[in-house]
Length: 296
Length: 319
Figure 1 (tube, chains in turn red, green):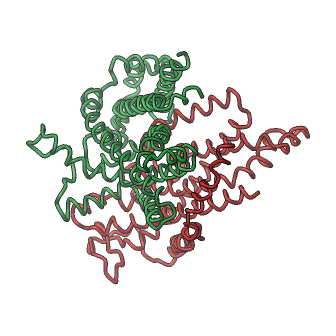
Figure 2 (cartoon, chains in turn orange, cyan):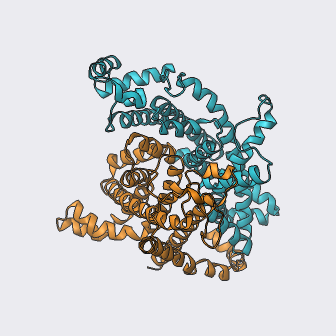
Figure 3 (spheres, one colour):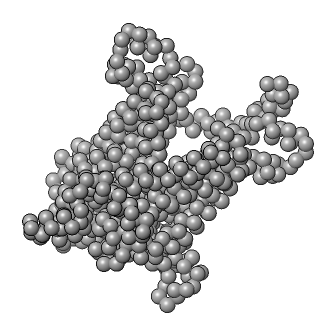
């Protein structure tokens, strides 16, 4: 303390030197562009597909590899499928996979984390140790391993596998939050009134933990979309007849070597922009919520 | 000393055993034909009588723990079984592949550490400037690009259009011993991973430097007349390094995972190519062998990272 007081003029000088108020403000601006893009892409992929008459799996060998023009906005692929309408169809599947895997993995993560944090002691130690062990293997490898064990692969399996792998980080954050929350008096009061663990979990722990893990949830949606595309590209994802953004890239390597760039560039761009928008929104929420907490 | 042994010998060993146990249990209790994992797709054609004798011979009817004991015994003897896609002992495949993967991963780690230190310090010194904003945003954006897609774009630009770098393999035909040629083949795969991960680590360094810069020892050093560069390299960096090394070692699984995917795309004959191929063709002996080897490597790197950070900052072990 004393040394701080000694150097306080210097400290002040240091802090006053940092300008950056302008940029910081723009940094925390509401992510209009991201939200607008996300709403558009989800709206179009979920509702506009009703108006497209064309079957996404319709194969027309008369029009393979047409480069982008006014008729086919993003061109056609090796089987003559229109890439633009396939992107809309694929968005529906890919975004649903991201959101579904977010829900399942956050349910697992919240339950695991709150049990571990609430009961503490040896149980907590063992549970956290287990998470560390799970995290040793690269996630994509564990997902490929689990996927290879399924003979039939569908949307449910892929959601299951992604959420089995991605709940650990949520559980860690939930645990550290629960460790903080359980020391408050309202938990003690609730215990004295005879509440059991599940009452405390649903009434006190989850509502207090949710703001902190919203950012993680956004990241999980983004990671889910990325993982689905990687898996499908590796040939371990959805069956070929389900159009998803990953499945559109399954022949991308061959097409790239044939110099037919449009078949892989456009689906990839949609994946990137969607994931980036979700990450941006998540980051905004994190900043907003963490600032609110400090003012409380 | 006891904490030392406990931390660096006992707990990694336990971790390794639990890891192998989990891999074994998952592979053996999943729904489906157990013979599938040995005979692959031809398991459907085995008759009932043959099935019973095979189950008896392989010991598949014994309790799981006994089976696990046999498997782990074989593992330490180096017998991981035969890959039925290649028909060769798994160990031989892994030995060859491991060299390539290690070369690639070392290059990736080296450049990630150097570049993220440089970028992070640049960002921290220009905190709030446009440069800082751009580097941070671009870093986040690059983090959102799927590695396999970036690899494809690189192949399109550098191999197909410009024809500067090779699109696959570890060496050109006839140049097997040439190390420079080998390095040339690692440029594209490694740069994909480096570009994808650099933002995350440089952001970490940036925030850490900003934290450290506000400490009192910096003011003391400055009042002693030590130059800015010297404070940065001798004091601040030394304080950051332990946590940076720990961060790298704990997020190593992401770097390795990314490089495995990229290996597959560039058909670089490392572990990654075999992992995804064997997952696709249900080649379980090879798949399990590769996963165990990667787990072992990650544990090894984690221990050495902790040792290095303890050496740099002895206070860590007391905690």
